[in-house]
Image 1 (cartoon, rainbow, N blue to C red):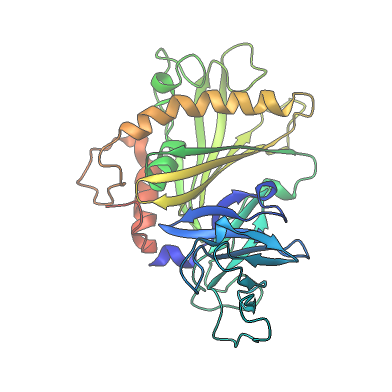
Image 2 (image 1 turned 135 degrees about the vertical axis):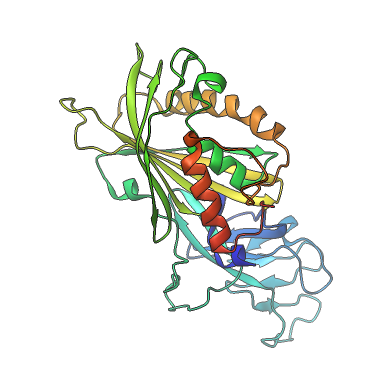
Length: 336
């Protein structure tokens, strides 16, 4: 399965603490997250190899993950280092729990279930299976705020496609991101990239495009898919404004839990340092909870990749390109 060799977000970094393990799920696999004495995040199969108890029910003891059933302890990397019932026993290398590669970025913990085809030993690979890009992260002039998580009864590809879609603004987000009086979508350009697809020249008239908007205005965005379950919106500032040359972004990062259940985070990179984090999150929350019931109503819940399965219009260029990209990438989880 291609998806197992990709990096996926599974939790916010602050949720993984050094005192207690955290249970998460990814691609229908139960995983336990914890931190060792160095503060490094670890990810194991959430099952003790001794008698199958859930390791997430245990605790972190002296920098080791301890099973709740018989107290077996495992160090970073998965090796068993202690069997309390046999104090003098030195566990051999074969007595270990399966561990997964972990990285932290964008305020999130990322896990990969399988090594990619050509691993270079640094946590990235030469076959393109590095962490999804979020270019605004490196811009110190932009403030970063995470929103979520949202657990959504929809497939990850359906959620990404919704994020890329502008023609629903006037209906789902009426009075906010769109209006029934301005529903026409101007022609925009779609290109393929080494990591996905890119739409430029995306324009819409929005009554309230952000928390400070006081009147309707035409906005311009670019949308980029930087991994199968990651998309980034970039706001193009109007000429002559104080933000000209800045590139505010919203990143959509999704953990595919099951083919029909996803955990969603948004990462805002904004030039607004005055508004409270709560207000920024509340605005993003308002927008997404308008999307969520519609997303959860869609049938089939998996995203159809056969172009004949659903009807399309010229306004759907980006979503059609996204579907072709998923098919070419060999994605099978959350699609049909």
